[in-house]
Length: 393
Image (cartoon, rainbow, N blue to C red; front, side):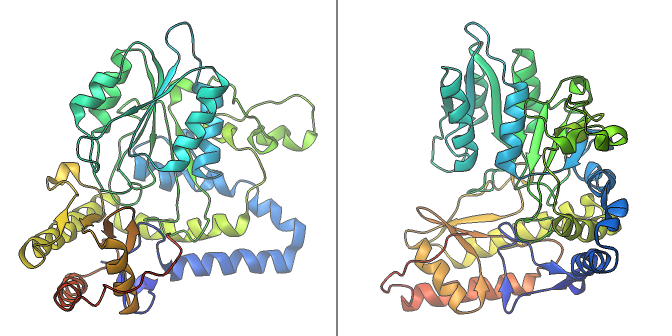
């Protein structure tokens, strides 16, 4: 789709749901900002001062929002803490937090810390199969005792896509504030966060957005909440026109920019700046259509040629994110064996190999080759060797 726009790693790269590859546009944008630093020094801040805000229109298109509802800042966990400090207001019996048993651990760490601080409980929606969530279980968990619910748009392990609009409507009917973690969906599929009346959301930009390792995350706050004062104010969230007046009292910026805390890394912002240019050219609807083609093709290939493996990603297009979760008892060793053969997936404990055929750069031929190598490994038993310790990304 845009394969020639990327400097792809050697071999077959199927781990873009952990770290997207470098694009020529991102590299050029970083180099441009570095040159400004070299030539202008501190005077370059005249150009950089509102860089994060200037990225908002492109991001807003990806998540179905108004530009003033979006800002690039922080990381997922720090942004979640900042938004919990603003939106989590337990009162009486409505005081508990709700998440899922399949959430990314860092989200749960933040939520548990706030539950303990407020003498409340973090309640977890159970999974019936250990991989996916049943929508009836989600609905039943949205009780009158829940003050705030926090859910992933796409489950990081299985790739299940939740029904954001329906679940948000259920929460609103019950008077529950609801936020979403869009880490595994932004850049892979379209969203309608404003129209769905989501209260707030956060995401990272180093996965499908391909903005670079440790690239800044982002957040969404619905316009109806723009009157709220940030629970964790910082000087970069001060209104721009008086920011350098150095007043001791905080005057919040309008909209989502008020939730910035500290001075951003311009070089990190530049990676996102360049990466977003690709999405501006293509459009997220085309990306989603191609993503569904690739994941459907991969699932059919696995079904036909790898009967020892189970696909744990939902098969319905409307319930599937951008990656495919393949379950096998020796998933970790299979993942390592693939990497040794220049095919890069990733592993999630205890038994999932995640394969992300990303619309922007992966091909059916690469998926054929991956399944072929998996077949060879399973037939020969080459993956059955002493396991070595490695980094799980």
